[in-house]
Amino acid sequence: MTHIVPAALPVDFARLGEDVAALDRAGSDRIQWDVMDGQFVPNLTYGADVIAACRPYADCGFEAHVMCERPEELLHTYAQAGCEVVLVHPETLRQPHATLQQLRAQGVRPGLALSPGTPLAAAEPLLDLIEVLLVMTVNPGFGGQSYLASMEPKIAAARTLLDAADHPIELEVDGGIGPDTIARAARAGADVFVSGSALWRYPSFREGIADLRSRAASARGEEVGEQR
Ligand code: DX5
Image (cartoon, rainbow, N blue to C red):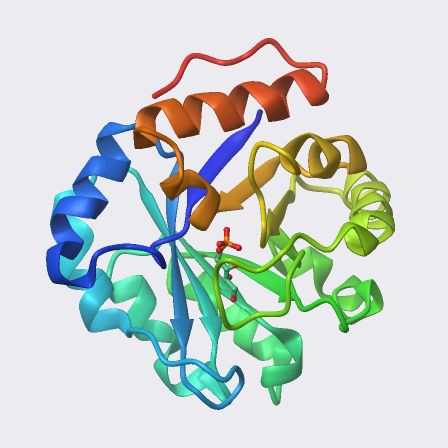
């Protein structure tokens, strides 16, 4: 199943709840919150309190993409804020196995996010503990960057790895995903697509989500599923 996940990064921060409600109404499968601490990445965004404040504005799922140094102490706050998925970067964790176990114990679906420079091997020993693997197609930290086609072999290798896993694991891509790149990422093996700046360039969120879903689904050889 093809999922389109708008990134709450190009949002109007002065009207955040309204933007989130509009993304939900437009058929988002989930909304991704890019949590950045200015340490792991050279940018600062928002924390769990902002996510919690927006939770009542949408029915769709929320996912937290935690781009922070030493995230362990705050990971429980994303579950409390209403996130169903929490993605962490393995290089930020002192005890990755224990941290992913804790996430599951908190009732969220744990995921790993791999920066372009982080090998797939960083996720292999932890596959039994995750339900989402995010392969970044830009360097984490900012929206509006260009898609890294050089990540496609990594996406394809991840597809092979996840297809051999003993439980379903979503293969998500994030970074520069738009009408000109989503089919390539889908053909490489992705099934969940995060889009930020490209989605905001469409006349409406609904048209953008529908177009991106259609492009990805046809590239994956799927019938274009009904939008939420
Ligand atoms: C980078 C962010 C962005 C965001 C999507 O750290 O993770 O990739 O989600 O933004 P666009 O679609 O503009 O690359």
